Length: 96
Image 1 (cartoon, helix red, strand yellow):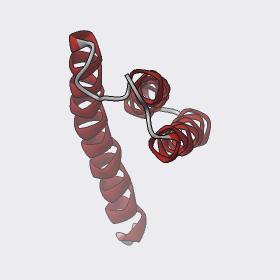
Image 2: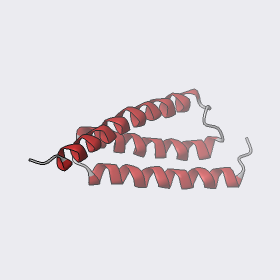
Image 3: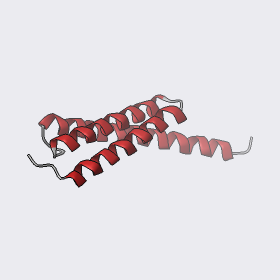
């Protein structure tokens, strides 16, 4: 199967982005949700490297499952992190 070099490079660039975001999420925050978010982002980065080598996000079938699971984890844990951040901001603004 022919894989366009631009496609591969774009996926490698995405993998770097997701990895950087994952490391930032793990190291910047000290909560279970941010650690889950960071791990999901790191795994999503790995899935982009696999995608760059297979040429498709849906082949092999388990890559699609892997990416779907990562997206679900990213959405749920990201929502928890943002909600916690908003709650902390509200508590910090209230006078004592």
